[in-house]
Length: 83
Image (cartoon, rainbow, N blue to C red; front, side, top):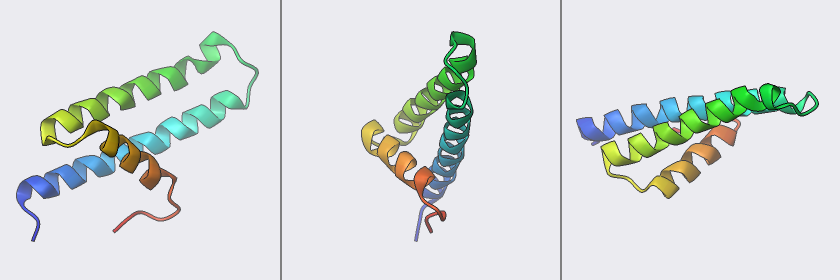
């Protein structure tokens, strides 16, 4: 059975997955238009915020940052949420 901390970590990880999907949506919108620094700024900002959130999560829950980042990416790209 999962501990409270494990449940908290999983819930926080789900938020990171949602945030990654939002970054992907902003990226897709940016790539539909010709490049301009202003046009890509929302994508860069969203990606930087996600990067900071992953770093904070890894430190808070004492998990590896690289593994966390890879898990978030793969689960965000999955067609159905992981159980």
